[in-house]
Image (tube, rainbow, N blue to C red):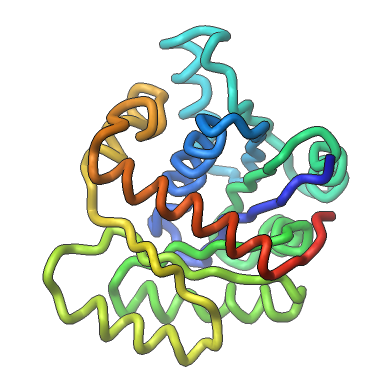
Length: 219
């Protein structure tokens, strides 16, 4: 088995990296895929979510498992885990730190969540450049999109200047996505019939399809 390694990256903090990583991982896990997550962000939000999950639901909820890895061990750990899983999801730190560069270099696909604001759009460019330098396929995902606003379309037009693929699926500003994390769940477990879950499931399918088309081999 050789996993699809998916790194969630964004230079700007607060863009929703960890939230996106968790909900996508849960969606794929619920589909029967073997998923493991790597937390390489010093803030450790993914690990805190996982600890809450185990505390609330015990070992029956241990999948997808979360591992904490830092520094030079990231690349080796990704290569090792890719042999035993369908999907490896990496939650990388903000800024273009060494760990973030390694995480993108190790990936078969990088995803950048972008909120519909000029600041987020501008902050996306360094990560786009880094993915291009590492020759890693890249997918931009519009996140926390408010209803009925022209700003979102303006941001999409601005992102097109980066010569990067933009996901057809957008994620709304859904409170349920945050509420589920608070108790150690993903949206697919917490509210499987919600619009938030529909959006995550649609994005999960689109990401895997995009990954197949781009064809980069995992580390």
